[in-house]
Length: 125
Length: 176
Figure 1 (cartoon, helix red, strand yellow):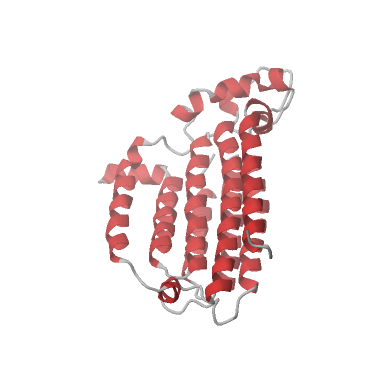
Figure 2 (cartoon, rainbow over the protein chains, first blue to last red):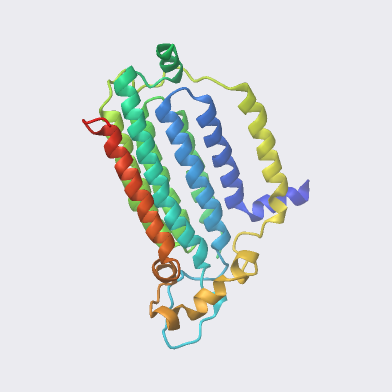
């Protein structure tokens, strides 16, 4: 048990990822309000990106922009750039999906006059 | 890298996420979500991911907040207030199980900031060491995004275009 707590304290980002991911997922499942569900979706997406970026960090490393063009590069002196590239793509795709789902919510509100999932289901019957 | 700044930032991150989830008024919740995005950008800048921090501050905190607000401003005030929180028992049982599994497996991950982690010793040194000769670009993130992985970025543009077309079809006056 003590080993496990030490493992969490060495990975504070992973602990934050687990809390944000599960809470956002719970909000997506449990809350009937559609915009609240999208807030939960946004928190789930960003928590996964937080996890990826935590993997790229190196102790004592700087940002992945090369300081000098002439010197040979020491890979340990720069943060790992590959999770950054993946995350840049993922953030933009995340906002694209968010935009489409918000447009869907706007059309649902225009058609049914409510954001509450249960009221919408009642009107569908 | 010391973690003295990291821990307070992560606590603030969880507090703002809790605010966005628990606040009843949706407009307030969206503004708190914007501050959550800014704190996330700070965490990423602290971890050395400056490009990602810029994108999160502009696209996450800026554009996503504006999209939420544009949607909410078209609605009646009584509808943008959450009346009753409800709970779902299957989720309340299943998600703690998933969380316990994730926390139990935490010991197998590399520690935060470990330079010898598998992600940092496999292919990423190749990009860091050869990017300058191959692409003449000091920013390795840019050279991977725009040169080594240009097709991925092109497909990302296709995704954004598709999302734009979908929004225009959903919100446009002429329905297909």
